[in-house]
Amino acid sequence: MSEDQRHRLRDLFRPRPVSTDRTVTTEADEAVPLPLRITAGYAWRLLIIAAAIGVFIWLVMLLKLLVIPLMVGILITALLWPAFSWMLRHGLPRWLAIAISLIGTAAIVTGLMWLVVWQVRAQLPDVQARSTEAFDQFQAWLHEGPLSLSDTQIAAYVQQGLDFLTEQTQALWTGALAIGTTVGHVATGALLALFILICLLADGAGIWRWTLKIFPRTSRPAVDGAARNGWTTIVNYARTQMFVATIDAIGIGLGAFLLQVPLALPVAVLVFLGSFIPIVGAVVTGAVAVFLALVYNGPWIALWMLVVVLAVQQIEGHILQPIMMGSAVKVHPLAVVLVVAGGAMIAGIPGALFAVPLAAFVNVAAVTISSGSWRTGAGPSGDLIWSTVPRERRRRNR
Image (cartoon, rainbow, N blue to C red; front, side, top):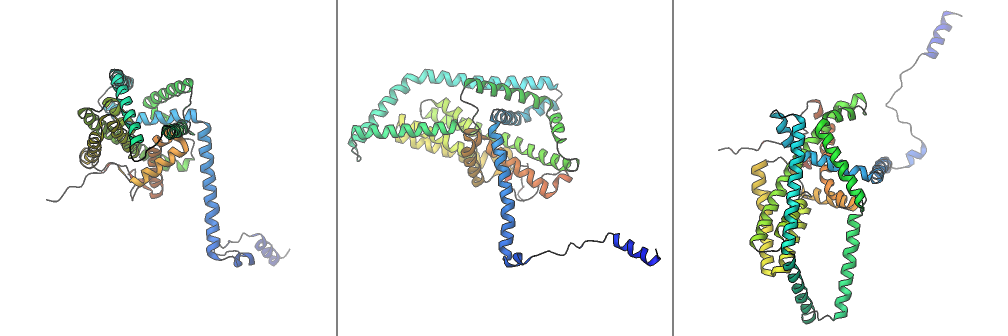
């Protein structure tokens, strides 16, 4: 073989660089307008994302008896985390800090339940008498008022209202993520949530380090930074909602007590629990207080109760919260309403409770990864829907 033939043979098998600038098109592609091709490209990608989200929701629904206790345990851990970390910083052993946190939480919950049961038992005869009187007055107004309804029509409307309330109650309590309708499911979920809470307080960092090994090695720093910023978001959310719930419960409960609205303490506890669903929960529980005042005390007391509810929410939102917490948490009302409504439609009451913290976590984690702030360890920068990373308050120039 000559030297020239050897060169040709080597050139034949020598790898050649492939140009990435060329786009292979066919006559069919050229016949389709460019905007339509771009739209189709986005469409199939969005369909894949929607399918992945649907599969995820289906798995969550399938494992609801595990997901709900896990979410409850994480949320309670976030509520206890500021006091728990304060005890650790001041030299208390971890086991003692866990015991104090659990015993203190159990004591507070037991005390509130005992006060509620005590007031309900004390005011039950008066509430029954007022209920009968209010129902008779309302029925007389239906007969003699501008509607002039007969007994048959009133009975039909009452039955329709009861059927509607029954359907809505079943829809809420038997949502996709409802813990269960049996006492066994509830007890199992409570014990599992308690076990998860103890494990997270005892070795939450170790659990996260083990979980982080599931991800590829190259993506672990980004995932770790996003998760840490997301956890900071959840802790700030829980701290803020605890503050908001306490202020709302004290203010509305005290107002109901001074206006002599029955069941003032149960109303305060209901307001406290409802305030953990931002905006929506406070509105609904405030409406319950106004409704009780309207039924048992008349329209004027109900009007004053409405003034108390609005005043408490305005003072808490515009004066006390900025003073106590600065601009630590800013939640857009439209985002809250949409997320809570979507969570309630998908998962009932648990969905409404966990929708906002879950959406806040996903939002901050996504911005942390996309902005690259995980490389420096700083919080995510940019225009967040949930600005839940604490920031210093601006000082006015004097």
